[in-house]
Image (tube, rainbow, N blue to C red; front, side):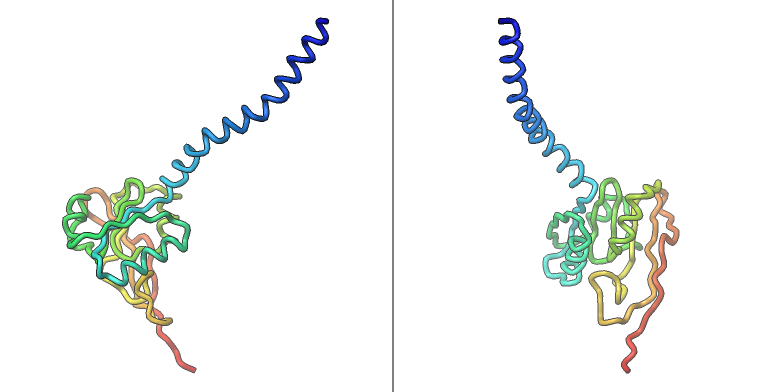
Length: 169
């Protein structure tokens, strides 16, 4: 009779174990989604009529980032709130984790930023250089720099992109 009792308990346990494992997986899944989404989530403040901002957001999404957008009449107060000097200004401002992003920063540099995690305020591409993500015009690209903006307001070149012109054959 002791064997039957152990067999019954073992069968019950064996039947309930897969359900318990599935339940644990279901309960922890939202945590994994939040953790993954947080690392790849970019919040963008842009003006509603800016087409290049829309294109930059599309570039980010195509590159695997989750993007939340906020339409504002003026992005200058957003830059000011994040402590980014107006000289780094462009047409949109964003946050990626604790970093401030300004302008048409390529997704490649955002991945590098997340990988290297430098002590900095963020990245900026001042102005609106032709050929930067969201500002594409065929194969033409102005030379531009992605700047690493430091907490003291200074900056250094994080990545340079050379000019490129369309050549018709």
